[in-house]
Image (tube, rainbow over all chains, first blue to last red; front, side, top):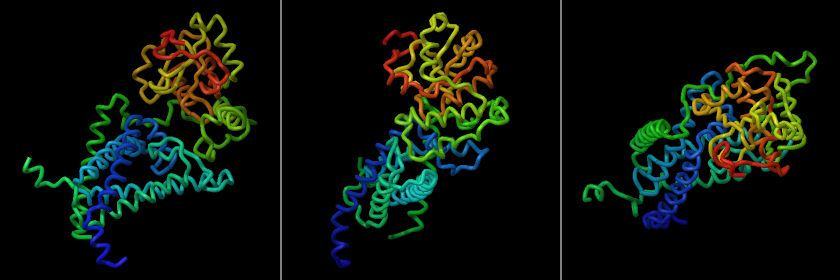
Length: 167
Length: 213
């Protein structure tokens, strides 16, 4: 596909709209699931061993704050507000958690002498028990959609500040 | 991508604002987390004093047990590993048959033997051992006032959660020990509610004593 064709496709606003809907709805629903049960999310976070021992506040704050942040970011993307900033923030979150999921699932696979894709655990993704490869694939799709939202120059079907000012 | 610095600033501001709002929401949330408490450390976190010198080495903890669904693993090798780990920490463990015998003993109906459900509100209300007290250790302030006097008065206390690799019964038992409950009276039912219901034993829904079997 030529650069001109890609530009026309982007100008149509369709790729951005699909990316916003996909990522926004996913974070809204999965963040909502975590928000409904903060303890379950805290337990899932603990399994990653990514927080220094003896500093429970850091893990507690993450477990307490992240679910609502995900819901808010999902809503912002669906509305089309601060799209690039939201996409970049979620991109960072997804990259960090994808690395953590891969590392933890690899440890579990090595401990049980099992293939990575046979590992089922609660990755804290908001879906309960989930296959590790399925979680990583889901994150890969979301990462790609975040990149589309970040790179798109279109602002079609986005809520604009001017519209809000007009009332 | 245009204006990368502006996008980065937007992301940082947005992240800080939404995370900050998340903390406010947590403070208002009925099941919000205490931010300062170490939820996975118990008052009795110490070397297992009651473990005999020749006790087998503690088996891997839940985080090290690869890819086993907690409920599905309620019986068999995993349950046995969990029981070994609890014994190595000096905790007493009861089987389904023993838990059932305790439940059916008239002393249980008289309040001398107690069951303690270490799960959260939704799980407890969905079904618990009839008459069991709830002790959600992530929100202990909700239960401790009613629970502690009953624990001190009881002769035998059976603590359970869902079963399998669920750790809440173990942590709750250690919490109760730390609150002064006699360790000799505390027992962990490793099979938990999953095994209990699978065996067709009675379950009560709703509040304690609701009688909604």
